[in-house]
Length: 89
Image (cartoon, rainbow, N blue to C red):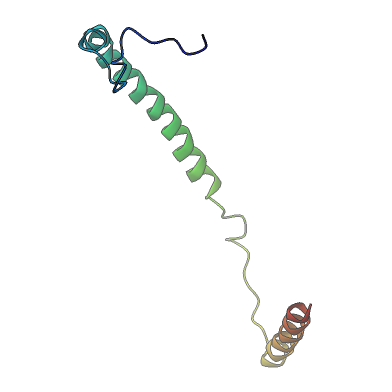
């Protein structure tokens, strides 16, 4: 039989029997410590990676040249035309 009835579960409610609860009790604290360690390592790696990848200061020292009003108007016009073409598709 694929799923045999467990002697440690109530057959009607499938809850753990008092014997199962007593058997698991000595391992609870160690399991929680292990869980905390695994979550701590995983969270630490995640936070370290997140902070490392968001240090994007590659172009912080590059000055942005001032733009002329005529050039700005031309760029806006080109952008609007491109936007209309893109939306028409």
